[in-house]
Image (cartoon, rainbow, N blue to C red; front, side, top):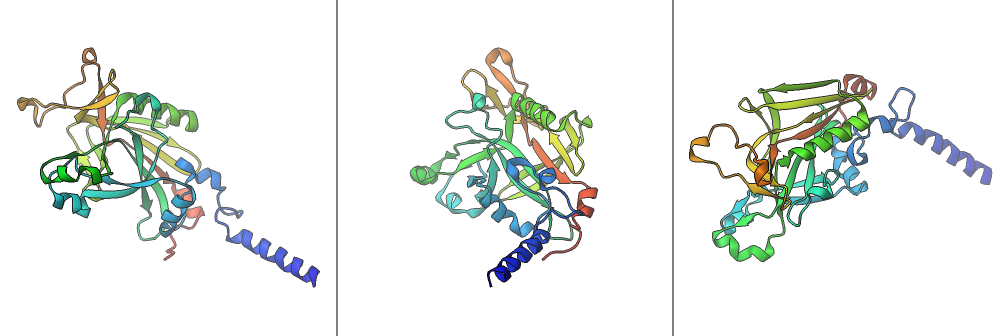
Amino acid sequence: MKNKINSSIFKLAILSLFAIPFSGCNNIPKEKITIIDNFVLGQPTKSYPKQMDSLGIPSQRFTTKIILRSFNELMDASNYIYMYHTNVFDFSKYRSSDNNHLGLLYPITLTGTQNNIGMIVLLGHTTSPLLWGDAENFKSTVKEKFFRQDVNEEIIGEIKDLYTSKYGKPVSEHTSKWNLFYAIDRNVIKQYSDTTRTGTEIKWETEYLNVTLFTGLASYDSHFDTKQNYYSEVIMSFGNFGGSPPKADPSRNEMQCYSYAYIKYELNEKAIEKLKLRKENI
């Protein structure tokens, strides 16, 4: 009886090997499609929250308005967004009591399927929202931070260095005034374009992955105070609205900031075909 049980367990163990994604001879070693915070691409989109939770990746609710003016605005669910996020870029050098540098994690699903083929990391910093009017009476109950999609230029440089050390020399670095980016719009993330400001895309390629760093667009909203170590609001002059963003003045301890910077990981065609991700898996 014992030998029969052992034999059955052995057979089950062998069969289970074929059920583990990415382990067969026609598949891909997991480490080759593992990205930020050990997230593995190529799995069903519906498993995204489960994988995030199993990895211990933090999640929280953010306000999507810097100013909340009333109780109704505080209660309006569309003024908040709930996101998983990475702390990889929360460098202590630029951190303050009110500012943390996070990357909000936004999964990419292959069109026509329910398969996850990529991840967009929206770069930005947190700050406390401003409560005006009736909303100020509920200040003690507001725990959420506002997520502004602005980061200072040194952080962008450090991220580029990190990715170069991991993936090697970029295959391309392209600067243009025609840029696509992702922005939080109330409680959803949308893609937009901009033709007024210069942006740079830096790309790396591996056997199965394409990785892009978009360095962002000169910010209309923020400068970084290098002496006080916090983000200060840009005060726009009347004649400058609709024009170029005000340049940072180093003599006033100002560092340039960039809006809508992001990192995109995406499986290439070779990986998609090898993992058979074009097959629907509802």
